[in-house]
Image 1 (spheres, one colour):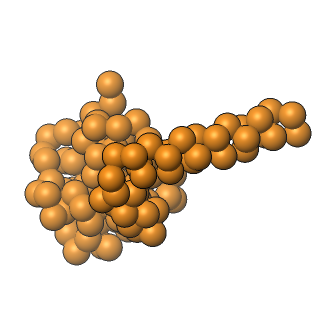
Image 2 (cartoon, one colour):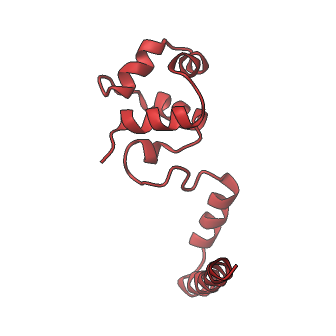
Length: 113
């Protein structure tokens, strides 16, 4: 499993940022970014949130909670999921059943195009 530092470096490089550029955006020193990437030092929660936002990922991905770099990052999608979660179990089941059908339809179209 990749560490926080390895994931940070991977995302930083994918974003096309140097350690120095990321450090400047975070108002810190590039040596701090290097220590994060070598897993010699861990950022505060606030710093991890700022880092994740700047490199287009989530704190959950950096911490190894998920392997998806952008899960639930879209605030509109997150709001919709929260709205669904607030519904009765029957309504949730119906909406998720319908959503599963739509997703299957899209996957089928992709497979045959």
